[in-house]
Length: 499
Image (tube, rainbow, N blue to C red; front, side, top):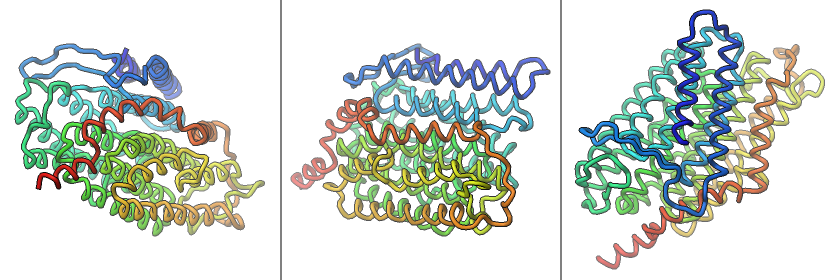
């Protein structure tokens, strides 16, 4: 069942890419969208059949692959990966639907998006360290090409920078994985066979350090973040949706699955520093966002800040805070995708993203009132206004983290206030006031431009009003992950008693 989530987009990419010459862009787009919809619907079917009460991997598939390397084709899904699978399916459909119908080389473009989606899906499903790494690297080349070919004026620079950073990330992760398997005495790369908890603390710290930097680049955390604003600004809108909504989650997912879960003692030892690292990312990202004049760059820097909340929750390692990290991953994916879509519509119709140029877009007669209203909803969700998914995910993280790290939690809460500041600047300058002369004759905004944003807005509000529909899938898995560690606080007390 799980292999279908990978094979369907791969098959779609192969059909589009290798079909004899003559397939036009409209047909390519239709086939790509059909493949993405089938994969998304299949992920929904899996979610319906998923049993939240079981903490073990479900729908497991196992096939020996390369015995000499200890590599097996081993897939499974649990409460940590299931929400991200569905999110990936949804945003892939939206990215394809939102793509420009007149873009150049459409067959290559849609093939790369489907290949990218298959790689991300495989990474979330992999229950083998080496298999995860292979899928993790699969998404590197498609995303590089999607930025380098269909990006903006400085697309070559941004794509190369992304490639270098991600390549370094992969090297560090692979080195840590090899160390985990070799030093723990495991005979293969299967997650189930690893017992790294018996390793000396110094060894665990070394291995965890490689994972932290490797996945920290992907998240990205300060100071490994500099590739992200450039990539977002130069990437087209659909690629920014996938980059912020799904690809960054590979980093946070990796930290939870392979860092906190496999090396709990080292994680507990470094947890205070990780919580402080989260504060730096949150406040730095928010401060940089305030200084931006480019709407897209502002949203990009906001992603850096909001991903810091996930690190805070993971560092605290309580059941509530860790559950909040999963909810925040989904929340950030939905909200950032909505904001990038709306900024893309503004740029497409107004011809600019500069806050010094555009004014009064909320004008009901000659502006974009519905797009402006959705933007207001999106920034409210990002700022943590109650009734939307952004509020409940951040609240759960703060509530679970405060008993463990009160100072760091309070400092991160300042970040939510700064979020309201820079997004208030964006909405006030771009959408309120008199319509500026530079954008006085705006083209019509069609429902095809509005539909993806409306879908995301509805999902954001629904999960904000009823967050239990999201939390119920992950809570048992998170409880099983956290309880063996007895939380950071308990481990710290045990260490103090031994001393």
